[in-house]
Image (cartoon, rainbow, N blue to C red; front, side, top):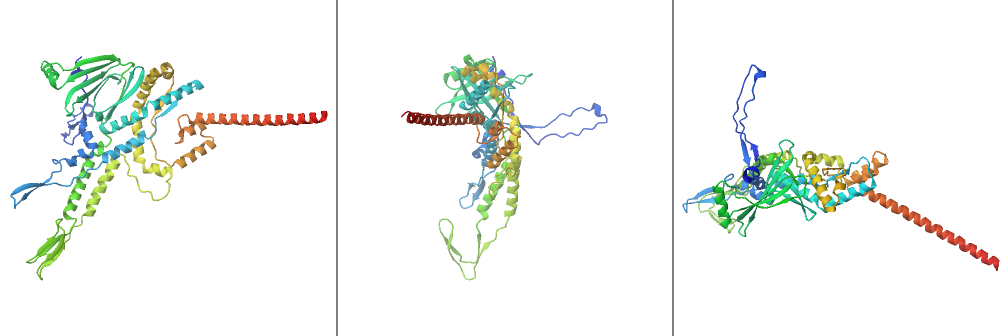
Length: 508
């Protein structure tokens, strides 16, 4: 198999550029009009750029080519020297990512058994399935899945079986993986998947590359040496048109499909649409800080002869000696605070608005009602509801692969697969918990909500909360019956004792 041509191919992330050729076409026959050719230019964006945007140390403001230092010439020494400018970078991308993660992953995935006829046996089996979902840390895996999708715009979750036990692993560019998904052109299903990663020596030099390829039946592992004698042999193979990859092992992965869930956002990371505003915001703040360094402190103006200034090593003036007619004043600085404030506030507002993030307001009173809280966080909730639909296929595929793998592990594959389980994301909403519970109680009292649904919707309930309520009620009934039985036995014993006492007295 030609690895380079068949597997090591992927679509690049691109962003449209404003440079394009405009053409104005006219026609008198609309039915004969042809679509003009689009001449839009696209910028290819490497995934490493997303990582640099995420971490403040990699922001564009720290690049001297974008925001250069100041070069000055010293007349006394006849030399050029570089004056470092103030550079301000802020973790706005981290804040945006955290808000999106909270609203999407704040609540556990909700599961519902949608069988038309529910039996006690199937309910018990469903609870076992839910317990396995939590025991295998699927919620944690999904959190890392969402995080990778928000930061580098793609993520993958691998399921695999080893010695009859299920394991999961997150695959992401953040972990050093390069992913190569391949889909069926008709069904759109994943039919092959490649993962390339490297091993490094103690000097952080790459010495061997690995490629893992999954299809619908097999897992193949390939090796490509970079250093040493094997690395030289690899280069010789490439000179003769060979790809240099050597098949190490080939095994059946045990699933009936490619055991990987993959998601990609072609728009880029969650802050992609406001990245330009973030760059301009950091540039404006850097200009402001540089301006404050130059003009924040008053500038002294000295006029006259025989003026002598004495100060300390930090430049602070301690004493001034001058003639009587000398003039000493301070230069008044121009006040441009309002202009800077308008610019910074406008940019910051558009950054949060364009990224569907919310800057938490200052609450000066007690608890806010639930409607007020939802209105405050409305942009984040809008984005979370959209993301819930975007990740819907992810939840369905994770449900399918988990049911298969956990069924094999517990040796209940056919039973688990017979369950009709609906899984979906419930976005996290900031809310007044006391108000929510009161609403649920009122709905239950008015007969428009069942006790089972109310126990599921309460923020303190578990997936099987209603079963626990029923079990507690049964225990209370058993305790009442036992108490009544003990009380009746005591009464009967007392009556029998009285009869025996009367009979003994009559006999005497």
